[in-house]
Amino acid sequence: KARVDALLQEETELAGLLRAMAGRFTPPVPGGDLIRSTDVLPTGRNIHAFDPFRMPTEFACRDGAKQAELLLATHKTLPRTVALVLWGSDNIKSDGAPLAQALALIGAKPRFDSFGRISGADLIPLEELGRPRIDVVMTLSGIFRDLLPLQTRMLAEAAKKAAEADEPLELNYIRAHAWVYAQENGVDLETAALRVFSNAEGAYGANVNALVDSSAFGDEDELADAYEARKSFAYGVNGKAAANPALLQETLKTVDVAYQNLESVELGVTTVDHYFDTLGGISRAVKRARGGQEAAIYISDTTRGKGKVRTLQDQVALETRSRSLNPKWFEGMLKHGAEGVRQIEAQVTNTMGWSATTGKVEPWVYQRLSETFVLDEDMRARLADLNPTASSRMANRLLEAHDRNYWHPDAEMLAALQDAADALEDRLEGIAAE
Ligand code: BEZ
Ligand code: MG
Image (tube, rainbow, N blue to C red; front, side, top):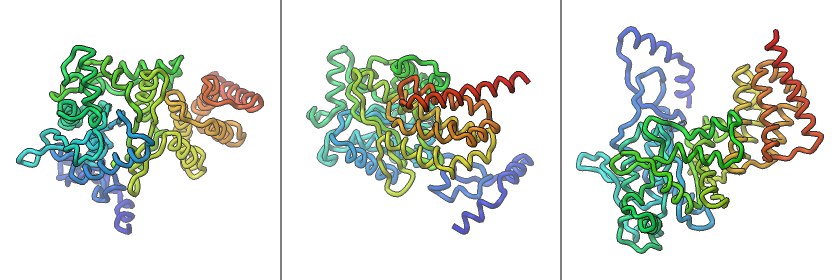
């Protein structure tokens, strides 16, 4: 710890930059997460990411299998289909542990060639697996798709091999689902077993975050539409993408569980708008595909200890208490001035993103956010002084959440919130007129 503290005090980045610009040697260093590996210090060196031929590592496979079992142990019944959101950065930080979870759920493992390089996926025999093969819809961020083409193909191969395995249907849900789809739609089994979905080549994100940010949706099913329009490109064992919204929709009908890993203590699901864009987006698409019946939604928090699986509702509540409403957090933010207020406002908008996509935000969350940041006069004045635009947006967002029926303040509170929003808007207009 003393060594890390000492290294963190050093100013190495500016020196490194100047050295590189002078054309001198910049020593290499593996990139990564400081909390997982202190080898990344000192910074200011030449970061190399990872060896794509060795991901997932054996350690990541063992960890992935454990996290997958933890998920299965948390959910009351054995899911038939799991929707797993995979990000590039998360996999790079952990040598592929999240993608190894997908392999574990399917009952597969990476195959290595004679040089020890990743060359595909093989099935683990059912006797060894000890449970049915679970169907897994893997939705990749555009960044994952770009950075991890070998792994994209490996995941597609795992699903294909599972569908083609001569095994009883009650022990192999991918095969069971793919068979029915192939019969009913007159396609081959390989097409029916496509389970790796992402954006079209060159495109990123589900656009659900932009719709929430700009309040540009009416019914929440419009968010499911956006998600499907963006994320329905199926990637096959050859790594090529083809639009297949019908297959995605059919596969979503059997999803009982949707989840994503949380890989970094620096971020929570309410810190940035990408979590509700991806996990929220697919959860809404599942709900619509299942005629209004929602899937269970979990966050697999692997940031400390052995890992913990939480319901999304508990995760949002936890982050509300430990970040948004925690004076240590918001006072720290406010030291950053206008940008700090923007971060607090982002927490509120991202929280509403979870209501819009999943409905898993308890009403007290909005009530306490309103009390703390808008109805408290001193705090409201502090925020407005530092960032009048973000303050006004925050008050209006809380009102929007009420308009959309995500919480139900009593008449008195609603009136106070409306008055505060009006005052903040007047103030903004005053500034614009100056
Ligand atoms: C990714 O690494 O895949 C990612 C990072 C931030 C937002 C969305 C995706
Ligand atoms: Mg992990």
